Length: 75
Image 1 (cartoon, one colour):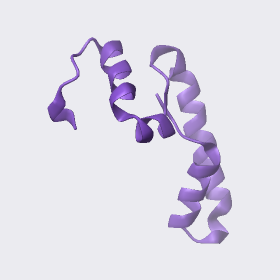
Image 2 (cartoon, rainbow, N blue to C red):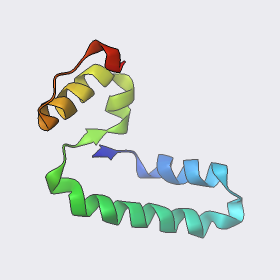
Image 3 (tube, one colour):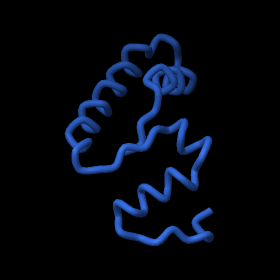
Image 4 (tube, one colour):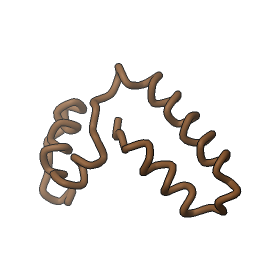
């Protein structure tokens, strides 16, 4: 699972839509968070900021979980 700061998610949705659609953005976030909660015990936890700041370490963990070898060509 890739986790992103909830304020950043809502801001991103609002930025793409009209401000009057704030309720829609919140609803989308809540729905996505509920789905993530169902899967969180079955997937590795990856924070979006870690993925952006240190993609190699983040992807090493994901590849280890998937029993895959991290290859340079991924980047």
